[in-house]
Amino acid sequence: MSPATVELTHAGTEAAVVVHPAPSGAEMSDDYTVKVNGKEVPVYRAAGTDAPERNPYDTKNFRIHTPYSFAYFDFAGPATVEITTADRSLDAVAVRPESKSIEAAVEGKSMVFTLSEAPCHLSIEPAARDRPLLLFGNPLEQDAPNPNDPDVVYFGPGFHKPDSIILTSDQTLYIAGGAVVQAGVTASGSNIRIRGRGILDGLPWDHAKGPQPDGGAQPMLYAKKCSDLSIEGIIVKDSWRWNVGIYSSSHVEIRNLKVVANRCENEDGIDLLDTQHVTISDCFIRSDDDCIALLTQWTTVPVFDVTATRCSLWSDRGQIWRIGSGWQRLGVACPPMKQLRFKDIDVLHCGPAAVARLEPNKHQPLEDVRIENLRVHREGQKLLWKVQPWPETYSPIRNCVFKDIFVTGESGGRDGIIRVQAPDAQATVSDITFENFVRYGRLTLRDSPDVEIGENTHNITFTGPAASE
Image: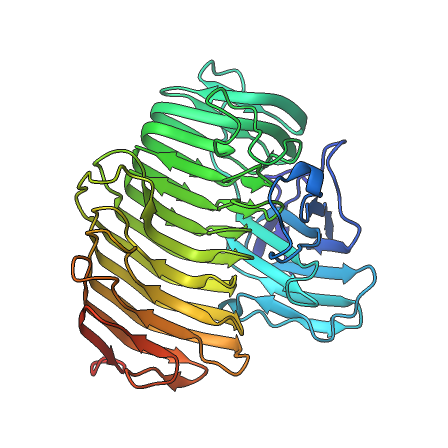
């Protein structure tokens, strides 16, 4: 069926599904078979932890990751998904995020369920983190660019290895469905678009040895000094370091991005450095390290006005959010990092470091942070939430709200430590509100277990649901 063809479901409702054939040379998975409305969908393999010779870090203290699977398709209207495993029962399968309320009919090694709205990103987990299937249901693509447009860097279906792609003002990088592009991308300028349904793959390069002109430690998708930058629809897979890094940029939109990674250390999902006016929506991130990090590096321009909504996040070793750390020059006072909004987020799995770490560094206040409507699936990690500036800095934290946070999963006998403290009187923590922060069905209050309020803190409040709710 062509992409424009319309199907009719048994109920007479219009539906359409677009499946993109896998190119020769792509690494495929035989762990799962996937069909959508009867059409077989290619299932790809994401790498597990690198062999020691590819990764200079000592990994003995880190979780070793097995390879896993992912698949993608486009749809509109009801889509019936059939999944069959090669060797595992699905009797105890979990479909995350649970907020999607997927009702699956399971029989032995097979399961069937229906999707109604795109985008819809799921993790199908016969055994939690071990060899899941990540399933990405995209909306139907609109207005694909003309491959003959001189301002379009176009990769059609197939396997491509250009190594390094350089984008400048008014250019579009298009990676079509059914394309795998092995390269690093460097973008600098205004009005730059990166879009498509295909895969940007960094697997050929060892840790911190990518092909970019600025050096191999740069992110695989590296944007610097950009304005009006859009990233939409593609899958970013198995980077050699950070997957997406946005430096000294403004007015950035990231939509329906999928990050499939966890092969080496420092493999963050999205990092924003010295960047303002950013929206992140409907994204899926599985990363070894931080899913979303907001940092200040060498300038006196802070990160501010960042909004992330409707995302599913999974960190295997780091934290979901790292907010405020950086490497700015000691003694250079930065304006506050502020106006940060994270809403309607699912944390599928988290590493041992914490779900959220707010830790400004080196003369930069952090203020006006709001995280709300957050659903966390936890697996007994000791530390859950940390609000604490780095020591020996003048970096206060103030005016933050954490509202409607719901923690479920495995407790390991602990609710998860919520730590609020300041290292000295020069970096106080003040006016912090935890509203309707619920761990394992119990409202968290100041005197609840695992709540640690340290010195140099002021007006730290724990409350129940607002009276109007």
